[in-house]
Length: 138
Image 1: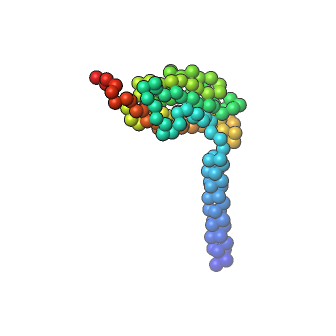
Image 2: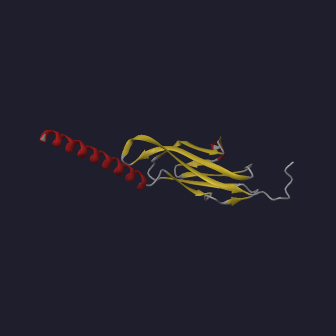
Image 3: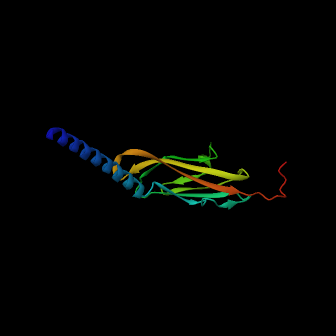
């Protein structure tokens, strides 16, 4: 009877240790700075016919594999519209949809706790385009 109790207690302790490790890993990944930070546009911003200015900053110390950086505007790849360097990317997009638009930024990079492996990170920003009502849209 005592052996069964010990086995159950050991199983419970092992389960709690595994759950604690998973929670710690999740908290660690949430607390670490990302591979990229979207400076412009701000979520929920409103733009007009001038288009939208886009600026993304990459993490320091060459953690981002710049050649893997992609920008999707409403699902369409617009990466070629950007000037990309080791510290970030910049561009201006035109021909936006009237109403809500979605920009998705994707890149692979290295986390400090996984130095030899690349992980994917994505950011998404939604913004509004308000075209003038008297604009000929024919």
